[in-house]
Image (spheres, rainbow, N blue to C red):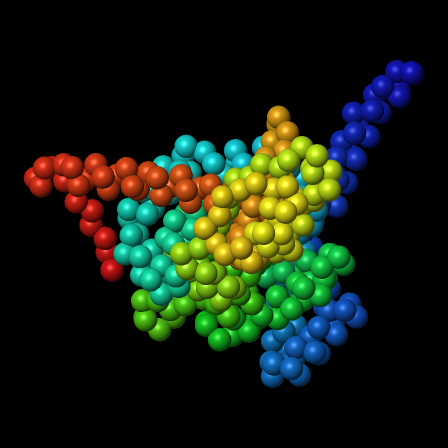
Length: 353
């Protein structure tokens, strides 16, 4: 290699790096594009929103390449269970879940009574989704939805529908569409509701005239409970059971289908052994969880499937299940300890309505 070539390499490298950065820079949505114009025309006519308002709003949107990258590598698809689990089942998350339950016991109890969903599952979902409301997302929801609606062909239809729902949500609730922040997929608030779910399932639990999924834990807890209830949660029923499989039956089984495709009796007839408190004809699914040492077999019930309606992943539902169990155990220990303490030493927790 010549001396001049060596001198050129740093300059060329810097140029390519700059080009890479430029390629990843957010740019304005072009409202002259046929697909964007078609969206504006459709929503204007369908929802009686002036075209000029829609154009002004979408002109302010920025397409974010980082959002598309994130969509292509979700943890639920990229990691096996033994790598996914440690993300959510940490001592810190369990401790903070316990603290969250103690601080918001009234809200959790009220939501549980009205929905039939045990409080530990409401707490666990908020814990998995946003670390109990601390990490609600840094992307503008408008940017996230516009990026995926117009620059992510695999799911463009879904995200155009969500963009429409977000526009309607902002119109109907007074949310500033240019200021609301959420996840890279456009999910919002402590429970990470997509706009359509916000409009359909969110609850004004404290009856203050508006629904706040960022700051009102009454609304957050009630909305999570209502979401699960509306998707078919059966109060008092189990979520998951551990199982074993007869060795000569393993080759005939598939534990990766996210569907209640068997019944308790049918699964047992296939060589799956597990204890169950539900009727023999109750629908179930077999789950093959990839551990470092091999497959861990589990059986999911109706309520497990309902959790996957929140996030269509068995890994997600298992993380919620295990976090819920861990936090509930800490609460039981806390309550037992508090009940044993002398009256003048018992902890006092102030809970604001």
